[in-house]
Structure formats: structure tokens, C-alpha cells
Amino acid sequence: MSEPEARASDVQLIHRVRSGDNDAFDELMKRYAASVYKVTYSLTRNHADADDLSQETFIRAYRAIARFDERYQFYTWLRRIAVNLCFNHLKRGKKFRFVPLPESDGEAESVDIADPNPSAADSGLRRDLDAALAHLPPDQRAVFVLRVDEEMSYDEISKALNIPVGTVMSRLNRAREKLRGLLQEYLPAT
Amino acid sequence: MRRACDAIRPLLGAFADKELDPDRTRQVQQHLETCADCRRELDQIEGLGRIVRGVQRPRLVDDYWDWQRDRVWRGILSEGRRPLLNRRPMQAWTRLLMPVISAAVLLIAVVAGWHLLSEKSFMTGRGMVVERIVSQGRESPSVAAHEERGQVAAAKPVGTGAAASEGQVELAATRPGAAKAEAGYGGKGLGAAGTPSRAKLSLAENRASPARSAAAGERSDELASLPPATAQPVAAASGARGRIVSGPVLLETPPLADKDALDTGTVLLGVKTDTGGRVLSVAVHRSSGSAKVDSVAVRQMRRSRFQATVRNNRSVSASFEYPFRVQKTQTRQSVQPATPSQPTKLNHTDKSVKQGDQPAVKSQDTVNKQDDSPDSGQQQGKPTRASR
Image (cartoon, rainbow over all chains, first blue to last red; front, side):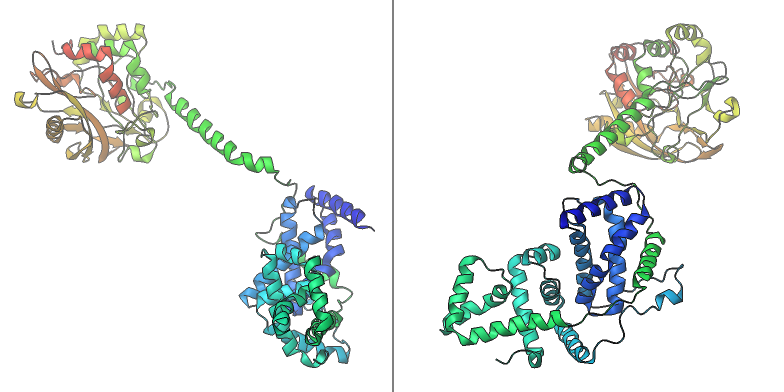
């Protein structure tokens, strides 16, 4: 599906959601659940947090869908919600704790959402990368992840985090400098 | 070269990200051709990106979608997260108009409320004075006729105290044999400062049609001889429901000494009475403009007595505003409440205290109109029939 077709399809689903069709929102969630999870995981480096933040992203999107501007891509809007939630989460420096839902059952909550057996070679790097990212201040971490992991442009990051492009660039430089020091063993020799 | 590196290195990240403008991109490229240190740094920047992107992300389990969908819907449907369906996005013009619409609705509500409270609403019962609008009654010629004939008077002003503060004041001044007097509920009443906010309630004034007025005038002597208006529960006589409150009615005020009646003016007094109608305190809420008149009015009011205010069949202390008029006439000086007192008090003083059909409670607005009206001026120069 081309981008215009995907956008038109998204808009149709959004119209259906606004008219009370919850199946349409199911379809939107199905389309973007993995993408949203990828963003939240990239920013939090924590499966539980990423999952909670993904859930919250869709909940907020549902409640705010009446205000969605159809001139923009739905995923761009969704991602911005996710980024803001994650950024606030990182700034608070603590995990999201949602009140247990009365309808929830323990079985569903215990589902492992991540593959428990990543490759051994990758696990070391990932662990070190997670540790290095954890050393970054939230503002630098968010900018770096959005640029490198999400491949967002400076302008998109600027809008998503509501900061000037110059600030995006300076935060990126500081983040890279710190990470190069922490991940030196994985980088080309200087 | 060192200085050139210091200028280029901050741009290497943006260069790697292809976010530099063409001029700076060329500048960096030219520098990199000659600077090995900066090339190595660029290699590390690009390598960092590669390893981050190369790290395998957690692979979601197969049933993740179902699990997440259930969680989201539980979150949406849980308490405080009710679905907001069928909502449309607010358009820009709607957002701009919202304050205007809100202001218009508020204005309409205020105006409508004002008119509703100003409209004549009759609640007549057996010999009951219930409600009416003060301002209308004051403007009515029939009222003047009543006053000239010294008819029934039950006083009262803008309620601000025990009765009025309840916000549901009804006035019931029963006058046996007082024809079909109609009373009003004057929500339009103005307060001491002449602002609507000051008085939400103004209590009634008798008002009759010209025919009724004439008929009443013929009975003026009879009416003048009646005992003062007695507050009675509306429900008791008319069957109306709800709380019953009678406004304070001025029963007596002492004669004004000649030395005190040197000027004319109306003072709006704040009066507090006890459950027996005795004046506890008096304060000037709006000056007459003359300190002498103010002082006289306060002194007179302190020595006055009101009919006890009754609410829900119980006497209560009250706090209210009362317009008090001190008058100097050509032949004699007088003091009188701007809302005339009872006809029964006319004969025991050589200072003319005008009497007339009065509402149990009236607003300052009415008082002002009365004072300004031609009829009022004529009346002031004439003794009432009752006083004759």
C-alpha cells in the first residue's frame, strides 16, 4: 500500500472510530502497535515500560482522536504521543505505574512480550548499549534515539519534543560524544 | 588546522545525518579531505549509528497484539476513561467563536432573568399580598393614588440578611379586608449602590389597576384604621408551598425634632434587627450627601422598631437595607422612611410621615424612582388623607 493509500485508509478508519466503530480502532492499533512499541522500547530500553507506554499511547490516541488533524499522517501523530509520554517518563526517572484494572486477569498480565532468547552475541552489545543509554540525561537520550533508532529528521524531533532545531543538534552532539566514550570497544579504532 | 577542526567537529554529526545545508556540507567535505582526525571521528559517529540500529530489538511474541489490544480497551473503558464517541474535531472557527457564544449566552441569560423577575407575577390569595415588582408598581399612577389616600402600607427594602440571604424570599403581608392587594417579587431590585448585584430580591409592593386603585382609595379611611400589616405565611392563607418569609416592616419611628429637620435627603441604611424587630445596629450604606441628614437618619433608625421578620413561621433576626428619608418642608420638617411606614402611625406625630400602599419589602430602585417622580414631589407637600 502506497503512502497516500495508507493515509486515506487511516483517515477512513479514523472516521469510523469517530462514528463509534471500535473495530476500526482495533484495526488502527493492529497496524501501528509494533511501530509504537518500537518507539517506546527505543526510548525506555525496558520491556515493561515500553509496553505500558504503548498501551497509554493508544488510550490517549483514542480519547483524542476527535482532535486529530487529517492533514497529517496518523502514525506521525501517534508517534508524537508516544514520544511525549516516554520523554515525560524519562524526565520523571521512574517507571509508569498504572492502577491495576479491575477486569484484568493475572494470566494476561504475565505474558512475556519479548523474545527471551536473543542471540548471545547481540545480548552483550544490547546490554552495554542499554547501559550506555541509561547514562544519558533524558533529553539527550530522547533526541539520540529518535534520530538514530527512529531515523526522524531534526525538524521532526524538534516538533515532537517542542525544542529548536539547534537544540536538537547540540543535544545530539553531546549524546554521541558520551556514547562514543562508553561504547568505545564496539567502535572503529581512532 | 586545529582551529578548522574546532569549527568542523560540531558539524560532523549533522553531516552524518545529512542535515547540513549545501554550503556547510561542502565546507565539511573539503575539511575531511585534509583532516584524518575528523575523518576518524566521523567514522565513529557513523559506527555508533550502525551498532545502535544493528542491535536486535525484542521480538514480540505472537499473541502480543491480542494481549495489548485487550489492555488498551480495558484502559479505555475503565473508570474515568469512558469512550468519547461521535465527537467531531472542533473547527478553528468554532474555537474562535466559543468565547463569543459563551458571552452571548451569558448575556441572554442575564437579560432574560432580569425580565422574568421584572415581569408582573401575581400570586393572589385570600386577602394576601404576595408578590409584585416594585419598579412597575412605583411607576403606576394607581400607586400614587393609593399613597395619597394613605392606604395600606407594609414596608420593606432590599433584603440582605436573614431573609434575603436565603435567596428565596417570599413576602406575605396579609391585610384582612385590604381588597385584592397584589404583591410582587421584585428580583429587579437594586442595591444601595444602584447595582443589580447588590440586591437579588426586592420585595413587594401593592399595585392595583386604576379601577382597583380607585376602589381601594374609597376605602382608604377604613384601611388606614386597620392594624399594621402583619406578616403571615403565604401557605397558611393561600395554600402556596415553600418557605415563607415576611420582610421587616417599620412599625414606628420617633418624631423628628425640629432641630434635626433642617435638610432633605435619603440615606440608605444597613439595619440589623433582633427576633423581636428591635434595631440592633445601623450603618450608612449610601450617604444622602449630607452628613447631618445621615446622622439624623441613623439616630432615628436606632430608635425605630420593625415588625419581626418571620421565616418558616418563626421570628428571625434580620439584616437588610432600608432607605430612610429626612425631609424638610415649607411648613414643617419631617422625617420619614423613604418607604413609608404604617398608616396607624400617622396620627401620633405632628411630623408628617407619609403613608400609602406599600410593599412589604421594596427595593432601593423603587425608592429612587419614587423620590424622583413628580407624583412623589407632590405627595411630599401634601398631608395624606390619613394624616388629615
